[in-house]
Image 1: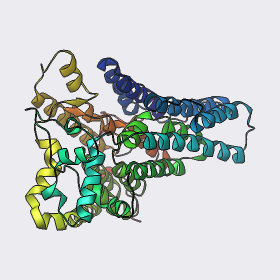
Image 2: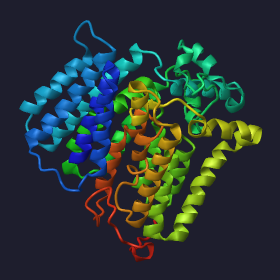
Image 3: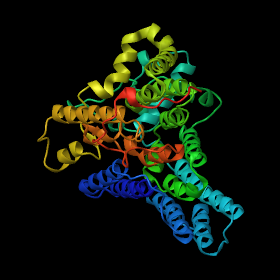
Image 4: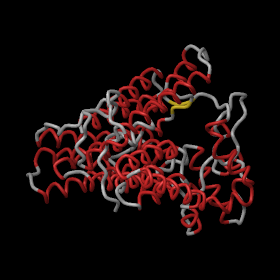
Length: 443
């Protein structure tokens, strides 16, 4: 729990540094600290008093409102200002008890939702990701194949954004194809048909669903601190609400992990695979856990179900133009894109120039991922959602959104109540063969 809070605070500092245009080393070090915190986290119950917990929660609520002010200024006292003041006041004067705790949590969440709503209402789209999802949804509703007919630069112009918002390639051109799996646009399509004009409202609802999953899965004694980790994660607010990056993949993989003792997990994982590419990195870890706990046959069966679900969703588009689908959704990994994000690749490019070739970062991140999977497969107790994403920090493109949910994913380990044999998420000293692991029943 302490590591999740430290990681939340560190990465939030990094997000603010990026928003303020501070030196890139600040964001680099802040995200490095946040990712490191979840990797070396020891599993133990936090030893904090009631007043300290309240102060942490109040600080998170105030941070949300302060972050909102960075992007949308208020000429007078705004509703979220009032709610944040109530949270701070309540931290000192409200008596203890479950009823008051529930009321306090409701006010904290109301502060978050109000700040998010102000950001959505007062700003336009801030990323090519949400423009792509909205434009592709409109194309489907018009009876067109978005993979075959999509032009991101044209869609950016439709929403009043310049072509510079499109992902740049190394030769200076812009990536125009649709680069996301199908659920990215199929899920919002009915809402667009019903008149939704800003997909970020949907993304806010998905973020709140993630918060709900985390909070409901946590032991009651830790829920206040878990609420602070959820609300205080400014990377989530900035990337998934303000900028407009679809968090559905995170909701689905979190659901798949929490339901991993049930075969429902395979369906949720398949839906995640059909939503966004980070889920592709997490899937082998969930399958590895299944193999260790439930047996290799069950792991193969569930892996096959997940892949079948993802393929079935894409089947109409694959039948129409398989090459366009494959080229589009693999473009972020295969095309020579410019370095981007808060990792060493972009920081080096911005400070001393392109002194390290792209291939070195690709090899380093691939090796780190393989090491993480090997470590987890030998001892699949903690970090199934954390270890797959951490190596992306040393990849060619280390976007903030890749790491935003790491603190909440770490909390999902605490939520399950498994007694770990290792004290930390990253433990290279494990010596447990697959055949030696106890097996749980299949739900």
